[in-house]
Every structure is written in C-alpha cells, then in structure tokens.
Image 1 (cartoon, rainbow, N blue to C red):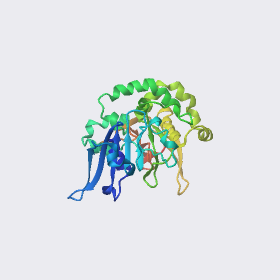
Image 2 (image 1 turned 30 degrees about the vertical axis):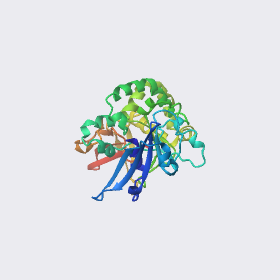
Image 3 (image 1 turned 90 degrees about the vertical axis):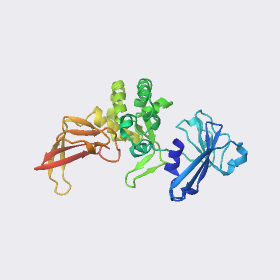
Image 4 (image 1 turned 120 degrees about the vertical axis):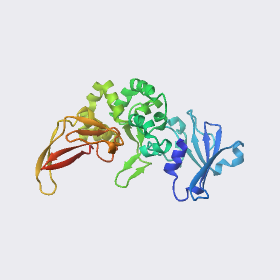
Length: 327
C-alpha cells in the first residue's frame, strides 16, 4: 500500500502509464509493477511476483523500489533505487554516501486519500482525528492500546524534541504514533516541497493534549521561550516550532476569554473583540454541524494552512466571523 501511495504521490503525470518498476519487498521478494491505459482509456496497473532469479530481469537497468521490514540496505541497486525508510536511517545510511543521492519526505495521507480505501467514513473518522493520516494506525484494531503505551514510554521524548534543534532522540516506531514527519507545504502554490527540510508535527490535537497532561512541567519549562521570537529562531526549528506554538496558544495558554483590540486596514477604526469563554471541538466533516454564536470552535484535525480556530459574534450591528490564524 505504501509503495502504491509513493507512486501516486511522486510519479503521477501524463506518462505514468509508460512506467514500470521492480519492487523489492522484505529482502528476498521481488515484484514487477507495470502501469497501462485500459480499453476504456482509464489508468490501470498490474503487480506480479517475480519467481525468476535476480539477474534474469536485468535489475541494473530497472527502477528499483525497496521496502524492508528490517534495518538492512539493499545489496543490489538498480538504475535508480528508491529506499522507503519509514523512517529508519539504517535502511539508507550507506546509500546516502554515494554521489547521486536525494532525500525526500512523503506527507501523511489526507482525509480524502483515506476515503479512497474505505468510503464509509464512520468506520475510521474517529481514528483519523486521533492518529492523523497514517493508515497503519487508522485501520489497526489495536491502535488505541499502542497509543496509550507510546504516550507513557515516548511522550516525554516527543515533548522535549520540540525544544531541541536536532529534535532529540526520536528512535522507534512508537514515536511515530505521536509525531509526524512531513515535507514543507507551500500554501501559496498549494504544493508539497518533497525535498525540503523535515517538518515535525504532533499527530493530532488529541495526542498533544495527552502529552501535555503527562508532561506538564516539562512543556511549561520551555513553552514561554517559544513566544520569544529571537530565542525561538536560535533554538528551535522553524516550521516545527510553528506547530508547537499553535498547540500552546490553543491548549496551554488558550484564547478563551481573551480580549483583543482590532484595527481596520481601510480606515484605522479600532474595536474590541471578546473571545468566547466556551470552546467546542469541531469534527472534520463540520459542514453538517449547526454553529452557535459566541462559541469558540477548534477543529479536531488542524488544516495548518488556514484558520486554527474561529467564532461568530455580533459586532457593529451584524454577525462577524472571527478567524484566528496562529503562526
């Protein structure tokens, strides 16, 4: 599934139907991927297991996609070798010493992409709001037990990683139930910058709240430094710091009951906004929810590129929608 997602993300285009790959899975299993246009002019593909010996299909002239469960690196390299690390450095450490190497980050799955797997959102919406776009967690029957264990064992590591320039000792799969590593998203062009520096985010609002409840003193000890832009730039990591800042404003130093003096751009008129004291979690499909006046809404799944919270209030004789973009 992950390899198919990789093909969808990186290799889609007008000539995708002309592409073929060799897939090496679990060290000794080889498959051939071939894409084509069917008789109805629809994109399609086939994956067949290769039973022949490696040399018989001339791997040196093939694009090789590698996905191992263990920490070894591929012994045989193709014309181009793409190693899926998941993300364990031991799977590509030596390969990165070669002259022509590139490191890319794949974004977690979107709500719409998860829906491609199961159209009945009621089966997985709750898990999506907890784990974010990670199919292995969303569709596992044991994810909540694993999450509870990860929060205890790895929660303090994830909490402290946002206060270190190297993001601390993130060293096991259980960490990735709490933390997501994504490429940079360029809002203006609506594109992912796959070869950007890694952007570290909490898996969800739910996960951050649980981490905070278990590590209040630790997070409070460095939280205020995030608000100091000079110290933040010197100590923390750009986009990742922004994600922490967002969570602090929403849940540690919440906006509820705050007052803001707002100045209009066009005529310098100033008025005061009073943030509601009552907040409400907003599900992803909130278009079916009836919104109420003077209630602060916080989406369960942050969309990062637009509003982080909002409310509707009466100002100047009319109803005004106030949206907070925390950055």
